[in-house]
Image (cartoon, rainbow, N blue to C red; front, side, top):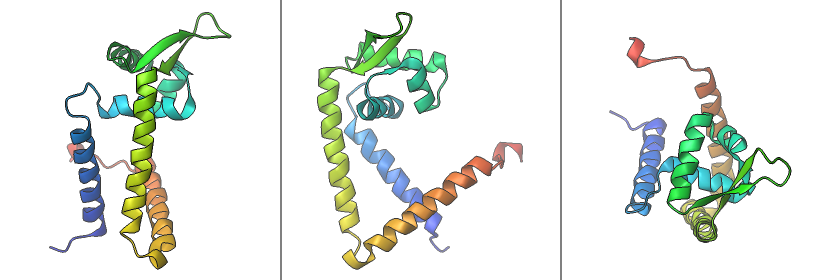
Length: 150
């Protein structure tokens, strides 16, 4: 059987998953918790409602997620400066340091992976990756195939 582009993309995805699991082994961090921290790192303090929208989760899920992050010392709840009924979720100082390092590691890994592509092919490679991402995003939005239905 020939290895398809999809097979290679799935292998890349699996390697990223393995790397993330290894990086966070021994911590209370999960993929969803890291995603929330990543959003807070990039957007700054946010209401739980805004965070839920960014993560595409329900209000109930975001409450549990923020509770877990707060219990582990990664996030804190602060009074909203303009709405006394709302609270903001913010990174703790130690989480800010960790996320800054994670951003640096992210940049380093991106540079290292791109350096595996010949310099003269990099622009075309990046355009190709962008095109595949756009196509996959559209397909996922449109696709209705469910193998459980078969």
